[in-house]
Length: 378
Ligand code: PMP
Ligand code: GLN
Image 1 (cartoon, protein in one colour):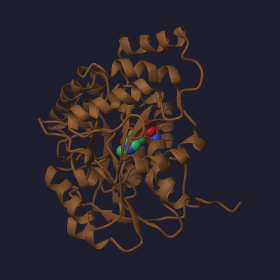
Image 2 (tube, rainbow, N blue to C red):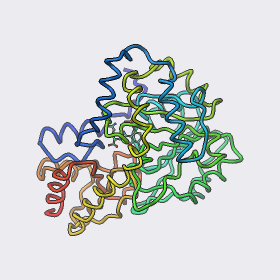
Image 3 (cartoon, rainbow, N blue to C red):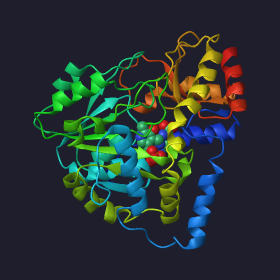
């Protein structure tokens, strides 16, 4: 077969998840909560089904949801997005990212990607004939070197993808970072995808610096977000994308033929649920407690780490425990010790100085307790 993606294997989230289930390991690999979603939200979905939201939604998304998203962005980031022309509801952030790439990237276009990178960016670029150009971040701080970043821009650069808070490192881009990015992109026509799926999971009183807060960045950005992360419903695959009308018009040309529209009753439920800001503003505290419990627990282990600043992931450096490659130790921890994590090499790192495993702490207290116990014995 003449494959369009000859180098792509089944994603690590599937392979490691399967191995974890087979060995009944404590699963801190794929990022998903193992606790229940809010009853109120679930009953809003049943209500929407019962009152008849069972046919196609509008192509751009249920209007009430687009309106609620627009209000949320304006309240948090002081930027107006017109629900009619500048917001589209998508099948999770994954489809938003794929669609934005497909709408703009063509043969020979370069797309700057920050590594370690979430695994869905690169195949989408390649499928569209584009060329990923990487900026590697170094362990343990994973900070962007903006001069290195600037040096990667050429006359073929069509797009840049950033992700803050960052999966898997748990770092965040500060206001200073965003201002640097803004000044570098200002003289160009480069489009930005800002993957902000962990926008509401940020710790120690820090602020999420959305690209929508910066005028020039906002004017060239697709802001991609995920209700799955925010409302503990990753299986609903619900997200959205916000962008200026001119960019969004191109996005919708692709969206309408990729999916046309997304789940109607869930959109209706989210529209009502999103109107109460405490439903997302309380998330920082909720996850701060989990992060604190996890990092305090492993303080006495042999792992080295910098506490995650955002996301529900913690990277742990295992060099005091083993000199194996990350995939090998990751596998061994599942089969011999009963705990599953994601090796950092799955995030396409080409710098093998970081001997890291990624652990998801979006888990019940009892799961975290068991995980800490196992990790402290290694
Ligand atoms: N971007 C990042 C950085 C992620 O971690 C995820 C998690 N799956 C996604 C995008 C995709 O989000 P969704 O599940 O809403 O498609
Ligand atoms: N974003 C999730 C993670 O990083 C995984 C989602 C998926 O399985 N594709 O763990």
